[in-house]
Image 1 (cartoon, rainbow, N blue to C red):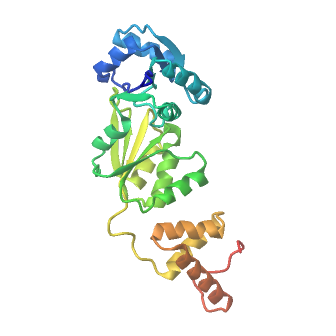
Image 2: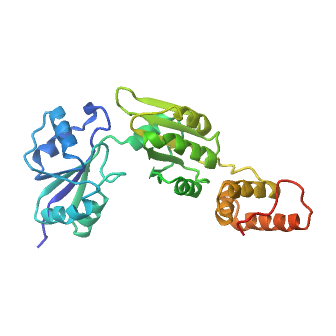
Amino acid sequence: MTHVTGTLVLAGTPIGDIADAPPRLVAELESADIVAAEDTRRLRGLTRALGVHTTGRVVSYFEGNESARTPELVEALVGGARVLLVTDAGMPSVSDPGYRLVAAAVEQDIKVTAVPGPSAVLTALALSGLPVDRFCFEGFLPRKAGERLGRLREVAQERRTLVYFEAPHRLDDTLAAMAEVFGAERRAAVCRELTKTYEEVKRGGLGELAAWAAEGVRGEITVVVEGAPETGPAELDAEELVRRVLVREEAGERRKEAIAAVAAEAGLPKREVFDAVVAAKNAAAQGHVSGPVRGTTNG
């Protein structure tokens, strides 16, 4: 006999304009046995705006209790319940709670379906004016400056369009870091308050956008960045490679990290940059180099 279980429904909710709520969302809110919401207060505001009355049990499901609550919801699903998962805005699991529950449901062979809805990722892509045929979503960057630079360097040569979420108070630092790693002229779009009253899309080079953001930006932010050019980075001679490593070392980076960063920027193997640094240091020690290349204290 086939074991019949319940159904997990992931429902997209408006990212701004309440009129964007899909009709199926209303039906699911009214009929679900359990509604798991990232913020129950936001859920109440949504149901009031839609004129919906939920008859099922409402529980909170957010980052702080996701691990503890998942087994409880899976148990309900195994018992035949229809569980509706909604987050504050957009689709569950996309930089929001949901992944753990979906993975656990799949492991138990529970049916998982979705109510398609608004997505800040796709909306920003469509409005950016940048290529959308191939893209990758990078979510939120690390908060610490060093980790943020490291993550950006990992995709410095990525040719697909990049999409990021960012908090408004960190936007200027993030754009400045992007300009440093990707180049100040790399095209980008900052999409702010999508579908809301004060929606704004600011397009330009990363350097220009970083200067604009330094004045202060508010609202929900999605950043879309052009991929690396197909022609690849401009070729750099050994002296320029060494100069760039030296600049990073003097800024406090360890030599190994500086070499890796410069190699990523130049699209070269790390060994090639390392060899250039060693050769320059040896030449400087023998008094053959009088330019900016010199020994450092990082070993």
